[in-house]
Length: 125
Image (cartoon, rainbow, N blue to C red; front, side):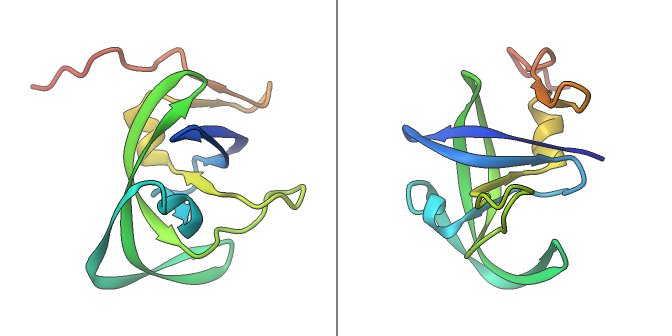
């Protein structure tokens, strides 16, 4: 498991993101969700991040660019995600399922994202 910090551009806005292979799902703050298509869930669920429990009752379609590569995934909406190691507020937590879908790997040694496996097309069987 590992973490890399970087930006995801969402509707022209640079959002501070944590790419976390230890988190299964993706999350965005309510502030980011305001510029995305979002919807209320017919139920609520609990998500625990960094030892803190959050009630999730809304989802959104996260569409943005990571280093000029388009991605889209569903994300759970939270009031706040938390801060990174330097105290900067995290606006998007990009989880393992989305990283797997978009071929994003974490290059922990060089503290950067590896996008060499980014899919140019999806072949479904």
